[in-house]
Image 1 (cartoon, rainbow, N blue to C red):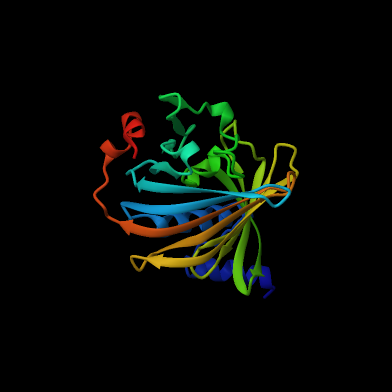
Image 2: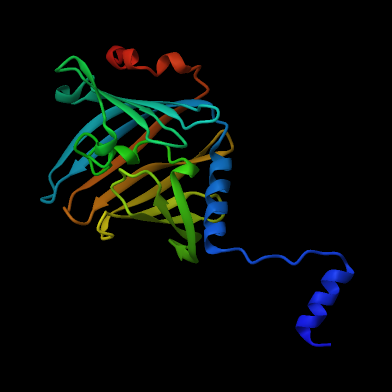
Length: 261
């Protein structure tokens, strides 16, 4: 019996459906969904962050920030970032409402002006407080924000990784695509290459020194964003995570921006 005929015969005999081949798009989406599944359920956390900005000449400036994050059932996370030091940015605060579908809502409180400024959808690609992170980078990266395509499996820093592309579905994104290296063992994102609207490599994020929290969630201590076009970079160093602190929706509104201390 010829091989193809034999396979068909066996499938019919055992009443078993023939499996369809998984596409690169299907595999990319499946990886993203599994990553999202593993990251759900923390409810809320607070953490501290040090932001170090470096210009092309190697000169640095440092900012100290407090962060609060709240999971929202059926939608993206809510978060607030409050600048404590240095004095010229003290009291500045950014409020994020991430959405699975549509444009995220973001507001920036500027204490010198004593007013809350809404970040428009057309400015999501703008620099967050002079850093190499854009406003769209500092919201939670929901699965629905992208379409996906698996590229290959390869090692990065001796870790076996999925390598896949994700393409923003929101019109005002500053990126045409992102190439992601994700550790296959723990689904930790180790590296992302960002391509600008001309599809030219713009910047690279590397994440390192991961720690596990609540025996479930892996978060990096260091997030290093390098802009290949300007020569600038930003290093974020996270510490002092505390989970299930009792945060609720009332801690995340425009009035809470003004009260941020």
